View: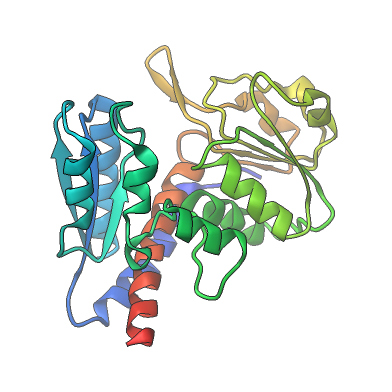
Length: 273
């Protein structure tokens, strides 16, 4: 079954917009970016459009390439936003951990600060799922895939895909192995019931590396011959029980889950007060 991430994302955004409409004012999401390139600007345009679909406004703060860590921290700290997202990666001259840890817990819809991520890992009350992990959860639940005791391989150990997805799958009772493009036991791949890839390496996973009936979730994006492609060769779809295309699979769904997190943060804040 081919997953239509755009359709699922649209359904989520309609639900979010209905929730936002019940509030006393629109929600503002601030995105902080440093020296954005063409790809980053394209991604920010997509996020801004989806924010509008969710009934929110996205305010983009663009900082120059020579911005110092303190300038980025000031943009994160500035009042007036209901959620703050930091567009990664940041230049090497800026302390990424310092910046991400400055995002207030009540504004961290991307679950990037150490506190928000720890709350997620330990499943604290009110903790949010990181957007890509939430997208994976959405796909599996809508496809009636029970992950308990399934053999899962997560490719990539990054903070946006690999780490949170592996943590969530483990929590759900899967037997999880994490490998990277160049390390780990790749012999596990042909035996995996579920493969989630976030390596960012064009079509490196071919049909000979996956078993019949596997669930293949492609969260990797890269450019190949001017086109955006995923980690998993589309030919694998013929063997897969579930397959997510790139583009149009995990990406739009993760963005929708990000904005769903914004409204959840707002509701949590209101319940506290």
